[in-house]
Image (tube, rainbow, N blue to C red; front, side):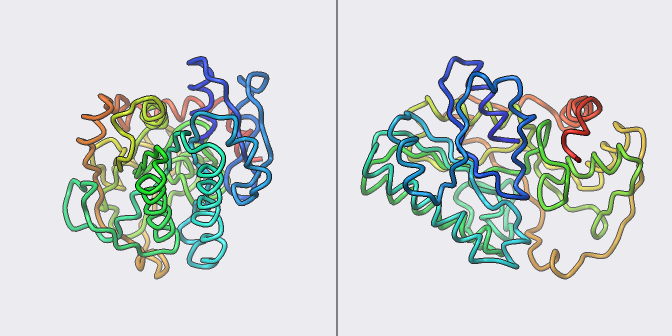
Length: 312
């Protein structure tokens, strides 16, 4: 979702775009996502862990948006070694190539709000302690520190994002391991049941894909954010149950059922989250423009036409 949406935005802005995607199941690669720009981009089936495969791509580029990753925090609990290989070692491989081959290239890293772990204050500033609860969030934090090391020691221009809960068109809808808003929307559109853990009062910060892509694109060209860590979210909190009700209202179908927290979820629940986005607003002169209600409506409109390309 993020990579394809960003590629479309960059092509529209006149950039020459190359996409590296190993297409590892179940992380969301979908050729339909780039159908409108397929003849304008080059696509390489390369893994960020592949040193020889990455070298020519890094040599010839000016900016890397490194969105590659193992994306399920629950899967990271079951297979922490794979998570480490992709979310840390793979990124270290990229940065070593950068250091040797193209140290002036700008690198934008996609981190996660889950790096913070248990939340002690709202909204959450970038200075909030990081107490990761899963290998996924641990490796995101480790990779972020590694990027900052290459910036301090080798002067590689890096920008570190910590992304809240993204959703929107082009997100996968085959499973519930990530992109929860999209998964719930599919359930509602098919007349199914949405399962909510606990009382549904947990608060999250949801950012629509167009707003996130706008921030990423600006970070690629704005020198003020080099070396900076930036929260990116809506800056607003929404109760989980209110998000679900918006989905049910928009879809006009489906139902909701409340269930107790499963043990493997409650153990990694961080508490309410709202991103403090004052730093990114100041440095990038950026602000989110799409409300959750409008974003869910746009997402529903997209899948009402294209759903089969995301569930088959």
